[in-house]
Amino acid sequence: MKQWAKIISYLLAFALGAVLFHQKQRTPGGCIQQLPPKAISYPVITYAPIVESVTHYSHSTDTVHIPANIDSLAIVRDFFAKRHYLDTIANDTNAFIVISDTLFKNRLLSRSVQKRFFTHSYKVYPPIKAHFYAGIAIGGNGSRFGFAPSLIYQDKHARLWGVNYDIFQKQIFVSAYFRIK
Image 1 (cartoon, rainbow, N blue to C red):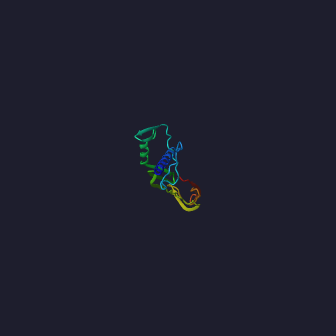
Image 2: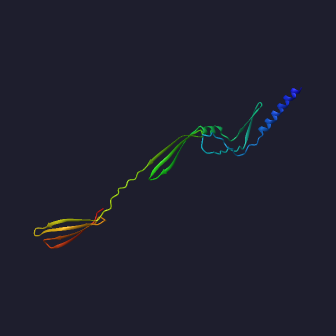
Image 3: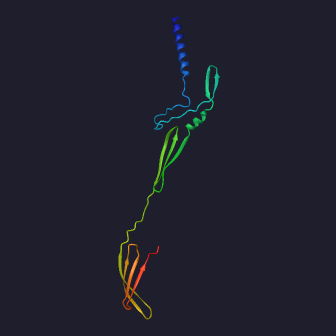
């Protein structure tokens, strides 16, 4: 008789514990999902959808609770989907940098960096210095002949200024030259 009393008390304690365990209050509106440590490097809080209505199915002694508005197939399909993301870091006259990520099962599957750096070349001309040039000018027509030693000055803006003195005609000529762009 004492053995039957022990067995019945153990069964009642087990049944009472099972009832109390299944009546545990859940936090409404969401939960914190635990992820494997190598999945991502920062914690992510995901919220479960709020169940508005619950359908109860009974089969013999088992009762199954199925939330009415949760699409399990869509959640599984989303988990096994391979997602590709492109992020442009820089796109200007100096560089073009794009990071391409591939995610699969909430993990970073691959990452590639595409980069292209642009080089700029500038043609640098040395500054023009002032110069003096010496030369001669020869010319004339059927009755006159001209011969003139010349002195030409080039300033820092590449303009030329000249002075000619014709020895035979005893005349002075002044000339100016400007760069045509």
